[in-house]
Image 1: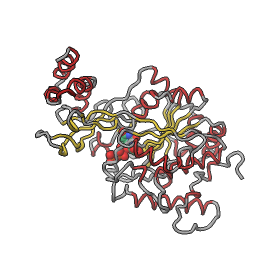
Image 2: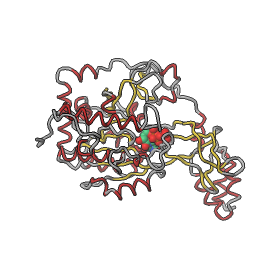
Image 3: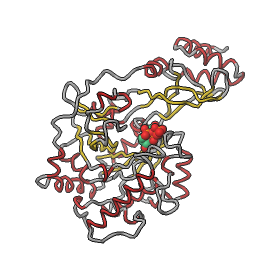
Image 4: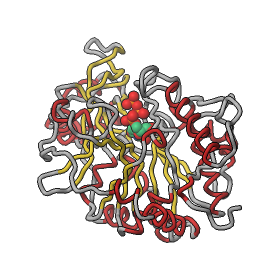
Amino acid sequence: MADAAREAAARLIAAGQAHLVAHAQGLGAGGPAFLAAAAAWPWEALSTAAQATAPARLELRPPRGLTWRRQVGEGGLRARLARLGLGLLAHGRVATLLLAGGQGTRLGHAGPKGTVELGPDPGRTLYRVHAERVLAARRRHARPLPAFVLVSPSTEAETRAAYAEAGDYGLRTPPPRILVQGVLPCLDREGRALLAGPGRLATAPDGHGGAFEALARAGVLEELVAQGVDVLTTLQVDNPLARPFDPVLLGWMVERRAQVVTKVVRRRDPAEPVGLLVRDVRGRHHVVEYSEVDPEAAAPLPYGSIAVHAFSTRWLLEQWAAGTRLPLHRALKTVEALGPDGRPAPVEGVKLERFLFDLFPHAERVEFHEVPREWEFAPIKTASGPDSLVRARLMVEAEVRRWHRERGLGEPEAPALRPLELDGAEPHDGPAPGAA
Ligand code: UTP
């Protein structure tokens, strides 16, 4: 064995991954390259995270002192916020990032979730719906508001193909930019690396928090700051009601000189699987992953995150430059991997993920903006049930009908999901400059 391979093997053995060294010995000429690649991972940190139980860093309390609901409803504040947000949009100071790197295992759709068809027209996929909202905002504000799409190695090829085939869904000036997030190894419940095949580690996308690193490494944060884009919004591909350029959300950024503003809804029930808004012992508000909170402690928490965030681009860039990195969380999942007998099999394993909301504790000024869930939150997580495609279709249809009513246009023709109707403007948004 050459020196480099010997060193790599020693590192792996010291990190509790001796089975990878044994595996490399059966790979013949490919062994040293496999050892070198495997030894580059920080196994101690990964296996500690894989075996960690829920973090003890927060004492969970219901949120308090958040007055956004009353404020927004009263005294013209909503209109004022919308005006501030419209000001940002009118100067082209906002960009948006669609998070589409997840594997969508619960839904079981073949292909990236963005290729799920919402309808009613054939080919009207989630990618198209999100693009329609961006297009509508570009038209309305007469600005080339930049749009990015986060993919992972699990979704990249099919997403690129879908965008290419659809002519980027009409997003031409500028075209959408695809960013690729990283992956992390999958481990077994004892913290040992799993193999996907001979000479291949099992890996999975590094969570929606991987967006932070992907944006920074691609130089996007620097570019946006240099172009005078102050705010980046992020939304999830599986929520067709998510609004990429909501003036009220953006207005909070200006009003409070916030580094982060994020949308929350009243939880549907005490068991709803959404990020939970909690208060820590110092009175600061955070979002924590529902699967890390004991169900009894989670039950009385009234607000959930819908994962629509607005970030100051300058603040994100500063955080990256200052060395802020997001922590690892473990999710207990079935991983397709080589079983103990060396044959492919579903293994009860661990996927490691980073969460975008773990940036919040680094900010001095975070605002939580409550929105009506029926207007803004139609998550598509499972094939049936309350977070299903069928339910999301009904919610988007209800949105279109509401807009028709509010504009005095009467009832739209069924089915009420026609693309042109998704112009994204709410009555309280106020008129955009140049709008009729
Ligand atoms: P979820 O955590 O619901 O995961 O992602 P998922 O992949 O859609 O579904 P499951 O858990 O495997 O069933 C919420 C959003 O974050 C994005 C997803 O694409 C979705 O829009 N995401 C998730 C990423 O962009 N990257 C990731 O690594 C994970």
